[in-house]
Image 1 (cartoon, rainbow, N blue to C red):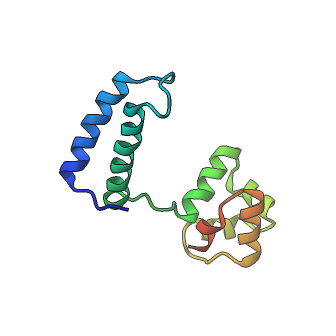
Image 2 (image 1 turned 90 degrees about the vertical axis):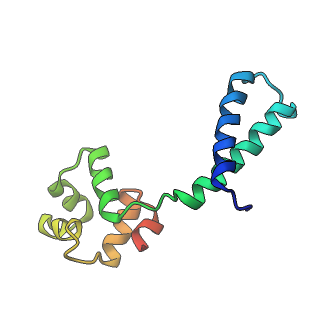
Image 3 (image 1 turned 90 degrees about the horizontal axis):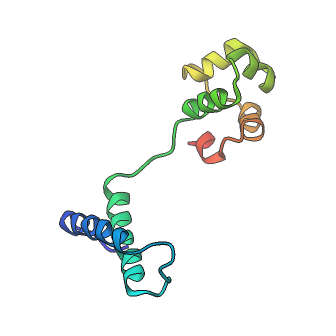
Length: 119
């Protein structure tokens, strides 16, 4: 991955904007402007990954997101994970580390990525 300067990044954004006005979904992948679009996009991506990295969400954030998505309250989550509501509160408030059994249940029943659980 090539190091990208701020000026190269700004230039790439300006060029990307212009290219997006000139090409469309019907432009072939081997068209020079389409190839330039890919190159400019790579420059932008490299700069943003280096300067604006997006980290993994915390386990607590993921649990709360899944609870929201599934319409679960803490007591519902406790039932689903076969634990108590007070234990769920301790996990969510960071007062207790999750157990291996709860980690497995979070992965299997809430589909939380293991990388998030293990961080």
